[in-house]
Length: 86
Image 1: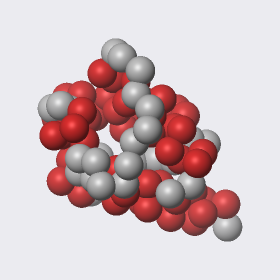
Image 2: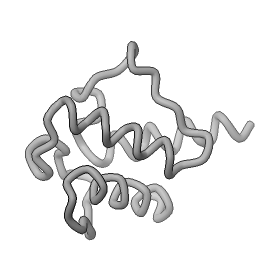
Image 3: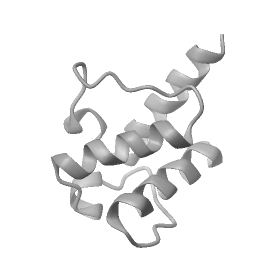
Image 4: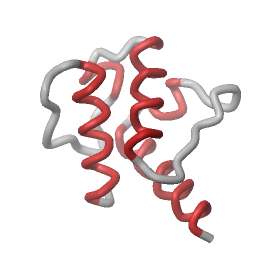
């Protein structure tokens, strides 16, 4: 996982769960390991959009199950940011 993306995910999680989050792993689950409910998940995605330049989520095309693991979310962000840069 890209260190910049990991840092952004940790910062966004910290904002939403209101405690410091560090040392995330790709196999961690956002619902199980961070107790994100659907409302918190949306807040988390909005916070990520603020932290990663060029990142935009389409709320009609995805749900929490699409990004339940940190690894799948990081891969999606990486692909979106790379596509935006082209």
